[in-house]
Image (spheres, rainbow, N blue to C red):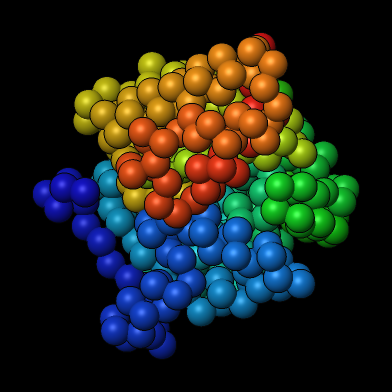
Length: 328
């Protein structure tokens, strides 16, 4: 991250920098491969309870990306906020117990009123705080399938996670199917739905004047990504979504991934190339008649693991996901 382009601070009225760094190492701050924490938590008895407990202890890191756009990072997925006279526009809500810290961070950025909360997709680490954010004055906006999924019990088979339906206060009250444009705080926000990629509910949020693009969980910056097959996710969709994001960005665009550090177009190019390479290698082996276990044993990601296999999905798990979801 270029220190001349952004400023960072931690908002935590009860947490020193030393304890913040300690907790970040333990809890898996978004900029330090939180997928590992997600996978570990999923193996325990109650995924949401465990994750909520960690989120309650994790400070929020604030990074200014543009005069009125900031990145917020805690235990859940990466958030962003646009501020101004039209009210705050927040992207994602992390876990419910993080809400007081998020609201404190938002208040430290500006005193503008709460306006709109946009959910980038349905996953718990991006929507669990919807209800307290709604109670704080945010109106929730999302893709129509995100509302449908929050209204009913859901599961993520890969992580062995089952989640109950959310209460009505956590549901989006405005939805769209393909795309939506908002004119807020001096910018034209473009929201658009990807074809099923990470899930079937994924959207991106583009701030063209600020040159900030939030691509959510179609990008796990620096690691092999989680693709939620239970929600329609698939490798071909991830490749198409990342290609679409690249078409929206230039060399100066600040690109917010769903997890991991703030990214650049060049980094997203590398991620897109990795996805395409793994897809092509696995598809070739699958076409030859090999079973999933046989393809995993061939280690088709071996030449990429040193760069992408540290945190996130393990190479073998990611290979299995690609095998099961690739079209051949």
